[in-house]
Image: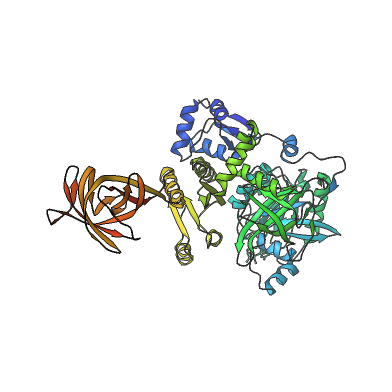
Length: 599
Ligand code: GDP
């Protein structure tokens, strides 16, 4: 008997609770199952489409299929409501597809001149977005070397891609990453245009590629479907104008607009540190106009926009919607994929950053933050240390759960967790590059570290820590965060002595005798970090005279290890500063140690 297939429609995400209900499982058993997959989840946790699908797959539930709710309304939800005087903006286009199908070649050919110029200038930095002009109109291209970028951006719930150009090699057809790209585009509610590439190749078979694509839900317009497919040769440049025409046409149908008279906002699409410049951050403006000198906040980081340049490195005083820019001025690196917003002044930017640093905007939204709270937060944040991490996982679900679990480590506000970037897949050169010089730890979960990458990490002093068990990873993170805490000075009382005679007083030493009233006295004791010297405070009628150190202990003229309560003996004291000890003085013995704080 075959079970009937059940289709669960989800919009952006689904809570663990809802999913359990849909699957007919109890919440606890679903959480248990998730746990087995290395995902630590709570009942109200939201799982995105991919994570939920993956879980269903990994649970071996074959009669349930997830489907994206068709979400015309969702797009406007994810994007800001527009006013009626919103203006047209350039489309934001991502080029995706299977490896070697020609994404880089396509971008290079399109941006030919620009790329050459950049290289001639010796600029090797990774530029994450470009703008080019076609028919007098601008098109913004996102350079997406890996799908990690999108995973991260999607995790932050932002839908910034209007159009996804899926590159499929006509001699190779639909491959796993092609399917991923299709899924991504659908998930992001982006319009799809297919570029059937390498048509100059002998084995190129356009109709077969189209049939292949139809099998995956993309019906070509030529066959009565709704997907524009443009046969191109990225290498020779064939039909690229047609592709750009189609991008603009699609943009026109979408009526892409943005408000410009609102505070600037957008997304962080890349961030790294550069010698001499500090933080260098690529932003994509999605609304308003960003100008130099303005204040912006992104997550827990804020900036006064010090310099702003376009993708060619030319200074720009003002950036309008859909414009990618590179700015300096962030005090700390914002997270990739974070939304940024303009603030009226430094004070409010700082405040907002602190509020964001508290992590949980939901909690903040539902609780009123008083000025006292704010002050407290500011004080805490001022003394706080930052633990920078990059998280790589085998699948999106594991990345999400590692990140969420890391965020749940309670640091009592003393350590700020800064997730520099996250991604699916093995540790890469780029991860090392991002982590280098910045005290950033790379956590891998169920991924591998290729030998050359491990070597590179060792060379650059980057710590790569790979785990297969989430709790081990979390323990490591916790103790690393504890390592960041300043050690505390801890004093421990040992005993007290009453002086009964002083035998010799010199500049740096005193020999005196007395009776141990409480505890004991010795020259050294075992402390938390090994042997520590015993110190003493000398009191005369309750007045503190000074501090001494116990050099040696004697009983009946014989050196002994210690004197205990009730015993009388002699002590040689070492002095840091010249003081006197007199008859009837009391010496309180203690140890002083630096102890690591624990979370
Ligand atoms: P990516 O991994 O998708 O970025 O692919 P690349 O752009 O690196 O291209 C992979 C290989 O295919 C390179 O050797 C390119 O020169 C080649 N290639 C890309 N586009 C074309 C094309 O239109 N025609 C031919 N013949 N080769 C191409």
